[in-house]
Length: 176
Image 1 (cartoon, helix red, strand yellow):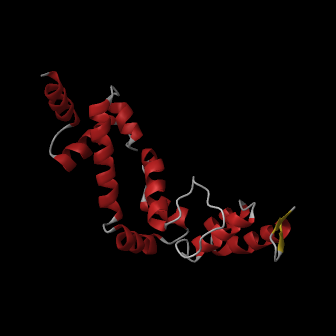
Image 2: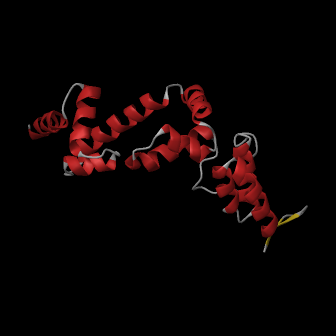
Image 3: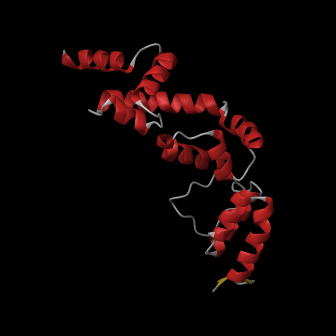
């Protein structure tokens, strides 16, 4: 099997040899290269590698994958918040070192990673606390906390109110 374009053909065997060589230097990039099946995927990988995703527009965009780096980061965090996402996980996803990823995140997102994650968790927690009947344990799991006590402690520290206080206040507002 090979990946074909109008200008060149890349054999899957050649991609596997490249990924084996790359694995010694950067395992996460090698894993991503192993997953390439189309020319578009290879182009996206190369763009990601050189952080050119904003500069090269593919001929046919797939709606499932945001094209700008900030949009990709936002989407990745949103989809993985329940896993207790860390800077290390994001750095591996992007293929960068943690230090570079931290600096890049702060530069393009306008705030440190930890503050962004805290804000996202508080916003999602508020929505979950006021819009459905999930238990605190279910909400904690949805936000990547180990248990409801860790979630409650985080929420109280971040907002000054406990999750139950938010629920009671919301219930009072909608009773009368």
